[in-house]
Image 1 (tube, rainbow over the protein chains, first blue to last red):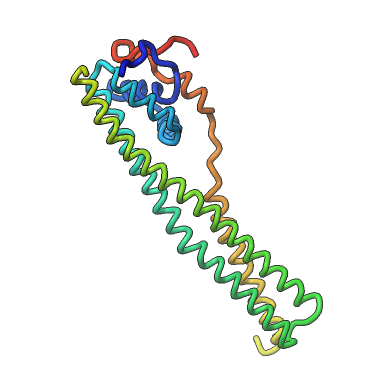
Image 2 (spheres, helix red, strand yellow; image 1 turned 135 degrees about the horizontal axis):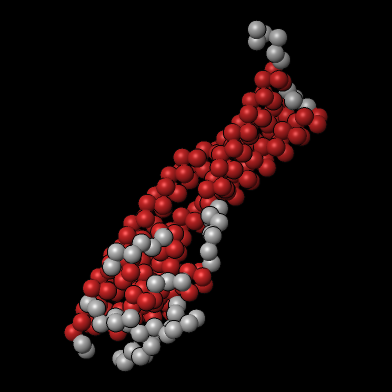
Length: 173
Length: 64
């Protein structure tokens, strides 16, 4: 495979540039780095472009630096995923149970006649909307959790491939 | 002190309290899951990346 002579400015080449800059001691804002890695990891075209750029690079350490950044990103994503799972299981689940319990209690109070009329209707409505809100927020949190897990997996695989590409490039094949 | 409270008051306040807790927890989860506002767009970051560091490692097109 012959790599193009000049690469375009895109997230993949920006990541290589940032890795090089970091290894030379220049600071890079952490948020920028994470966003670039996120963009590269989640896009197939960027992944392919990154591998081609690593193969074409003259510096064998370049692949190593990029792979290390990707692994660090995967660790961060795993940490964020664990936090999201904790929040879902500790807070989300109990918010849902509490709202479901309130719904049942308001049904019970209305049926037994302890609470009547508009007040009973208001209580049922309140607890029902609370249950729906709790479920919706839990779904939102879980979507984010799954997204993080996917990012972590992609970053780990890409780091391995980048190391391989670096080896191929260094052999001059 | 509590003897004067009727059964209705107790039940209504319990249910309302449970709903308030549940709403609070859900609101916290919503705020947590909301993506943080980004100061820069991806295009800006790509454009301003330190390409000058790549001059003898990789050839990257000049300009955007």
